[in-house]
Image (cartoon, rainbow, N blue to C red; front, side, top):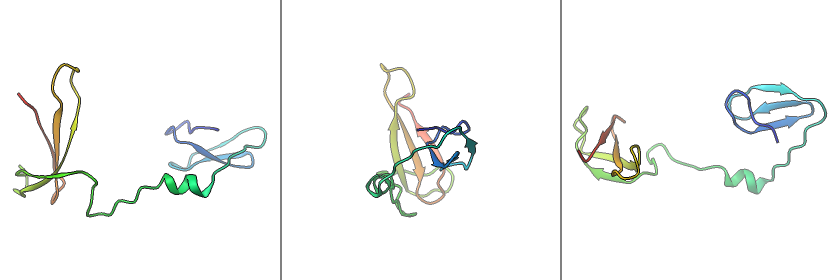
Length: 103
């Protein structure tokens, strides 16, 4: 198994040539590469997300840019572990991003 020097993604072997599936970077390695990928593996790695659905929960909050009253939200620990998480919002209309701290 080889990983891309440019982006770190797994590369696919085509004889002596290894090609990155993400950025397209190629590398020539000595000897023949061996890569096995089953249909089950490939299908399980694909996540289908439609354009209208981000997979995040929504809440009623006002966007500071466009005034829309709906936003996706998620929480992330960005400070030390003894402090509370930070809430991040993404407007469902204009996709403006902002955060809300407890302070």
